[in-house]
Amino acid sequence: MKEKQRKAVHKIQLTDRNTGSVTGVKDVNSFDEKEISLVTEAGVLTVKGEDLHVTRLDLEKQEVDLAGRVDSLLYSQGTAKMKGGEGMLKRLLG
Image (cartoon, rainbow, N blue to C red; front, side, top):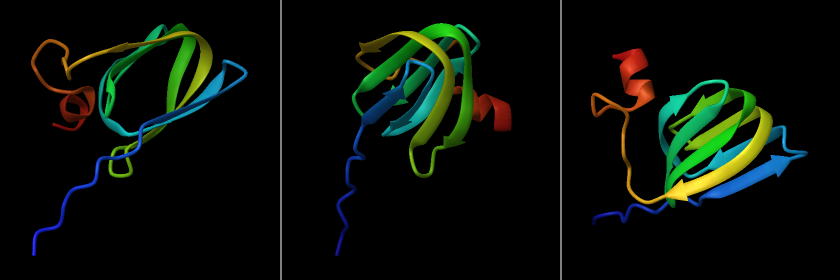
C-alpha cells in the first residue's frame, strides 16, 4: 500500500518584529544580515530587515527560527535557487 505524502503546513509566527519561526520550509536559498530567502510550501518567502540570523534550521521537520529586525515579508511563486541551481544547505554540506 502506498502512503500519500502529506503537504507540510506552512506557518509564520513573528514576535515583536524581532524573533520568529517558519514551518513548511523545504530549503534555504540564501541568508545574510539583510535578507533570508526560504523555499516554502507556499512559494519562495523573502524576509528583509536588519541584523537577521537563522538561529535554528531543521529541514527534516521543515522548521526555521530567525532573529533580527524584520522589515518585510514577501512571497513569490516557484522554487528559484541562487546561482548554481542548488540550495544554500546543499552548497554548505556538499
